[in-house]
Structure formats: structure tokens, C-alpha cells
Image 1: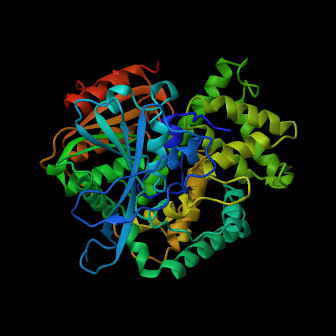
Image 2: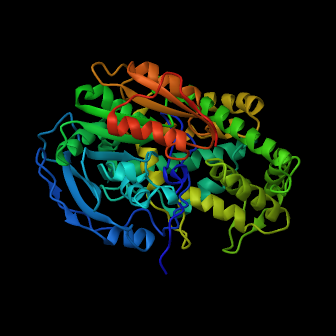
Image 3: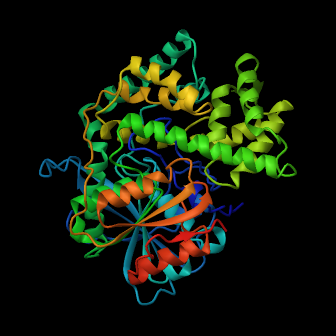
Length: 522
């Protein structure tokens, strides 16, 4: 039976909050699709420096959604890129898979709008398909699809583009089920050992190739994509981690930019520890907003008036006697915590969280597992996509400022006090990169000298990329202009009319939003 996507951008954009992702925090996929990774058969790559050879691929939306969007044509292609841009003549390449979505009523075409939904690890091909269904379903406005080809790509190591896959399902389950705040040393050591096992397994499989999945390499791939789609200058829409990818591109290729929209800003200047703490602060603030909503609207929140107390109590009870789910899994404190993270990406997720915790109190864990599995991209058969494998590979390649295990243990205690629900977990979440065997390749963090104006969009209630990052990224680039949404959830475009109109004017006419422009929540 065909499935219709529930297209909320923040839920489709798999996102991280920091340059070095920690949990990793990735927005859940509520698209209704069975898998983010399979789709069209991989396309043979275009020779670098030539225009892509597009082939119709209506099977991609068919497999993801059950149908294509009315009046849209779907074509696929690939571009060959060096595995290591520092050695472009080595002959070793990755095939970056792309989809081009073109409206049959397109007129006055401007060019291509290239999309990245974040992660790192999320499929730009899948997200572009979901966004092709129009604004009434949360997709892109017709004003945009009538003027641009929508081009989504799976970055190197992601989805269909030479995917990294080195974490088995049992270890994924164990990781998500583990206590978010292992207080006793024995439990902490078990979690550390699991992270070490995962890292060593990835190193054994990919070896020196792990360094090639760094953000700067992917940003250079984007310029190959720009050339392959036939555009002299790039128009780009990046969400969350996609803002880091876009900012890196802007520093490397400032004169190849037509327009960049960076929504849900990562601050590239934040170190690994500072970024993790910023993320803890953002989620704590978002959860407080959720709790306040519960208190103000008890008819919609069955765990009112004390939502924080209800969630804290559920986590504590799960340590002693977790509720069993329909598939035999135990709803441990880890799975509950993942469900909480999952629900905070949009304001609409608050009701789901309240009901899930209320049902859990009654002995029903289905709501908790539904939310957690959306976030984890865990399938009904217990398998996972490669989203978290890629996320780990990119983030650990990007950072070379990893704290020691002893320092993480210290921060766990300190952040538990400062951010009671999220601090300890965000500290422990830094463990994976401690054991990462690959070499590091940090991205640049400076001005995009010579680039045109870049629009940086921030949401005041954003849990994953805190609003404070917005001005930091805009200021670092030097040509950034801040556009603010006074709303809740992760990312803003195209959630409200005000934000949509401002971004559309910029993408189409290159009209920069007014200085200090702020858009109301609704």
C-alpha cells in the first residue's frame, strides 16, 4: 500500500549539533519509509570534470514513498571523485550518487539547488524525494521547484555512495540500550569497552581509508557535483551538519557560490568538548520548554504537571525493572533516553513523548520503541541502515581534540550537575572517538573571503544546534546574515510563512533578509 510521507524537514534531516557529534544526535526519520539506503541501483559515475549522464529513476520515490510526486520527474546519476583529494591522480575513486528532481512545469530555470540534510550520515537523495512532494506536505514551495532542479546527493560513505558499514546490529542495540549515565565504574567500563570494540572493528575493515570520510573531502566532492550538474556557481541548502559542510565549501570555493542557505548552524570554531557541552545545554533547554508546555496544556500532556519528574522517574525505574516490548527488547533507560532525544526535534514530537511515557507507566513500551527506532533508523527486523556508521566515521575523522577517558569521566560528573538530564550522556558520548583508529583531518574554520552573502538561519528553541551557534557561524564566515525563527525544534525552513518567504527571495532573487530579521513562532 503506498505510503504518504509526513514531511517535516527537521525529522527528515538527520542532524548533529556539533562538529564532533557525540551521542551521536541524529534526527529521527518519520518519513514512513522502510529503509533510507536502498533505492535505485547505483549509477555508473561520470568522468570527473564532465556533465553528469542522467537516467530516469522513478523507482526511487516508489521504493521510499510508494509513488512519485505529481508533476515531478526523477533522474539519477553519479560523479566520480578521488578517494583522497590530496592524491587526485591515484586512480582510486568513490561514486557520489545523485538524484535530480525537476518539475514538469518548470520555467525560467535558475539552475540546481543542491541539498544536504545533515547527519553526517543522512541521505540527501531520500530527503530530496520527500521534499519534492510540495509545501502542503512539508516539502519545498512550488516557487522553488518551479525555478530550480532539486539535486540531492549521498555524501561519500553514506547511503548509496560507497557506504561505510562496520557496526553490527547487536552492537548497535547494545549501544542504544546502555545506560545514558553510567554512574558506577563497572558499567562505565563496559560502555567504554563496547565503544572500543566498535572502533577497532571499523579500523580493521577500512584501515587508512577512514580518514577519507572527513568533511573537507566531502566539501570538495560538492564542487565536483556543481560541475557535474552544469552550474557555474552553486546554490545550496544545508541543514544542521549540512551547514558545516556548506561553510567548509564556502571557505574552499568562495567564488563558486551563487547562494548558500545554512539552517541549524554548527559552530566550526567550537572544539569537541565545547561543542558537546553546547549540545547538552541545547537539549536541556528544549526539554524545559517541553516541560513548560506540559504544565500549561495538561489536557494534551498526560504526564502533566511534572513532565521532567515523570521522565526522570521512568529512567530510574527502567534501571531496576524495564518494561518488555512486543519484540522482546527491554525498554532500558538507554532506549527511553533515545526516545526523549527523538521527540525533541519538533514541537509536534512533544505529544508523542508525553503519551509514550504515560503508556510506559502503564506497562506498554510501544511508544518508547517507536520513537527510539525512528531516531536509530532501526528496522522491524532489527537491522540498521549505515547512518550511524557513517556518522561515526565522519565525526571522528573531523576532530583531533579528543579528551582522555579520565577527562570524560570527570566531565560526566560536572555536566550531570549543570544539565541534569542530558549532561552526563553528552560527556559519555565522546567515548567513540577516543578509540577511533583512523587518522584525523580537521576542517577549516575561517572566513569565506570573496563569497557573496550567505544566509544563516537559526531557531531559538533548537535542541540540537543551539541558537547561539547562528551568529557564531555567520560571523566566522564574514559574509553571513542571520535570519531568526522564534520557534521550537530543529531547523526552520520551510516551517513558517515568514521564514519561507525570506529564504525563497534570497534563493530566487538573491535578496538578503533584512538585518536582524526575526520570524514569529507561528
